[in-house]
Image (cartoon, rainbow over all chains, first blue to last red; front, side):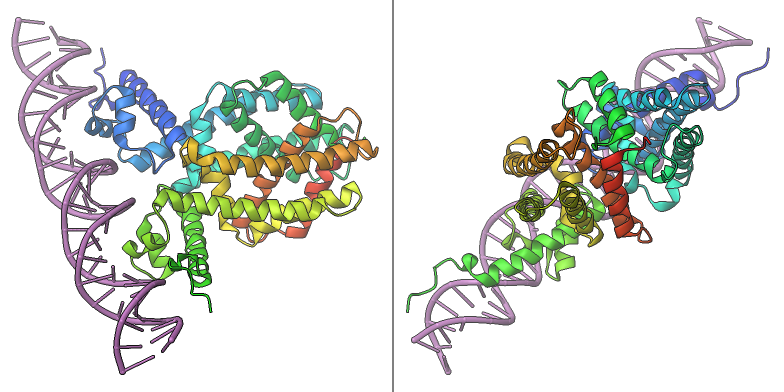
Length: 202
Length: 202
DNA sequence: TGAAAATTCTATAATCCTATAGATTTATAT
DNA sequence: ATATAAATCTATAGGATTATAGAATTTTCA
């Protein structure tokens, strides 16, 4: 049988533990902020010692990078799954909103970290994130463009502006949902969908 | 003539320098985050030595507190001024949006610090901020309620939800305006007003 | 089982940070 | 001009933090 690769850092086991380390980092970064969190905090949360964390991360900064990447990849993945379906605009809209808000409610710490802490990465370390974020926005924008083309939305709509505004709205309510446990997820999804569609005017 | 108070920390001069210290703290906290910023950074930005900063602040935490308070007081002040005028709903709405967004564009670092860093204050230190924030939201909510009552907005509108959503929208575009220098302030104000009023539906 | 590889641990170097105490300089007012 | 008060400075105690090196332990599999 073919031998395993020399470097076991490519084994499933290592990858699984590394994933757990990324989740631990996400959780700590989310509650204390990147600079407020220490590598000791993360290691303790994982059940190992501070120095051992460097078996999984090259540096603290690298940990932040991985957390943001993980969040954004799953985020874009969900968006792709929705985008590829044949569905009426309003249904797609509410599915996108649900995907976004339920991520927060499920305490997806990584997503919060991406939104709130990614700017602490040096510019050069943000290129991949920028690309993924841009991909996400383009999908969303295309959903709005399709809505306009099918006559579901007003023809003079600025789809780019609408897509970004929806992201802003969802980030706001998402962070609210993760802090205010009493807030209803379904109700928030419905209201976000409605206000995005119809605004406040009669 | 009556002598000056014994403690000169109540003089105008001291207050003016303290204000500058608060602004310096705001600027540093905004760019590096509360935990990422050091008291040395702030002092250097002010042109004094690290230790001297403690002539103006009891602690680093106290500096954050003051920055947030300053931001929120001016923010609520602007809102009151708008609220008290007799104006049609749509005009008031766009004035509120303008006040919010131009604060960001004028690089109002303090407002960004309040929005992004206030949660690093311990719970007990956030009571005043909570009250001010709540006051702001109530004014905004009342503007929406008035809009409904005057038949300018749909009668089934959830004014509370609408007010919070507008705050989320403005925070998003505000932070965009402060980062993306090319973005037009007036255009952003108009589009925020329009999407809040009419949404995306035809 | 036992050797090799993977994983975790301990200890530490080299900063960096907050807050305070007390000395020093600058401004104010008669 | 000088006494008093205000503002700033220097120096430092007492910790905390990141990253690394090398030892110790655990896992894997022939």
